[in-house]
Length: 281
Image (cartoon, rainbow, N blue to C red; front, side, top):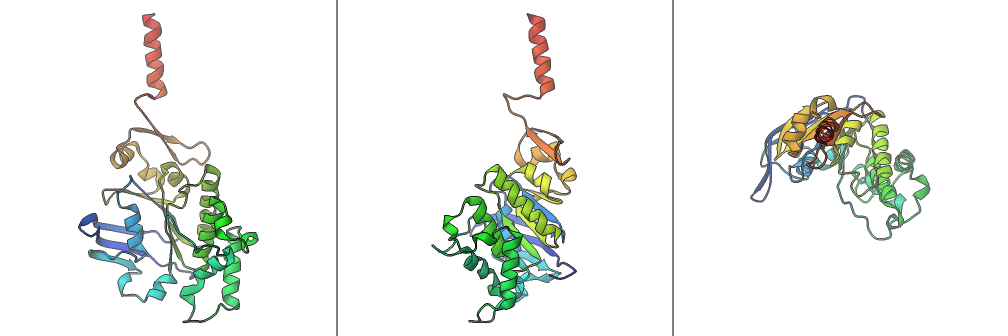
């Protein structure tokens, strides 16, 4: 990877599927070398934006830019050597071994019909080691647990050897321990020099792990910046239509979102109510 990381951005992009418009007139810049989380309610355009950033969806208007060059004008292999995407529900060929799947990440670096060489083998070995999957290399992917499979898919993306890694809901369907395992791994990769962009459902995981958060609602950015800037009670209400208390995570020090409900008022309100009941008694 290069010493100076490329900058991925979008200028005045509008995105749609057929007649259904998802994003309209959006500007965004992904901070290079940082962990960015994209959050928002279902259907707000998170995954659609990620697909556009990966050049899988062409904007109806505007441009996605890689170092100020429209990404649509760049050769496909150059883009694939710079940006890797892990979709939300990747599928592997039945019976494929972990090592073979990870090796597919080297395709953008190969000439037509060329075999993997010693350099490719070394990159694959590093990807397996970085994700803790070396011992799984000979096992079939469909025999693995959910957490193991997710680490294998990340290893394949790492084998692509890109500066920018995009992940759509990398913690979906994982239990809490595997969610932490995957996000800790992504943090390690980021600290080794990769730009990470991930769509996350869990606001508190986003606040704990991301350096930069983009909050979307109906295809528009409501707030963007550090977790302290974005994760406020007003923003949570505006993005998710959710009344919540924002306090401090005692473990990480990051903002911690505690949703309120009709049956769960804040402790202060409950104590006041209890005091009134005792007084009436």
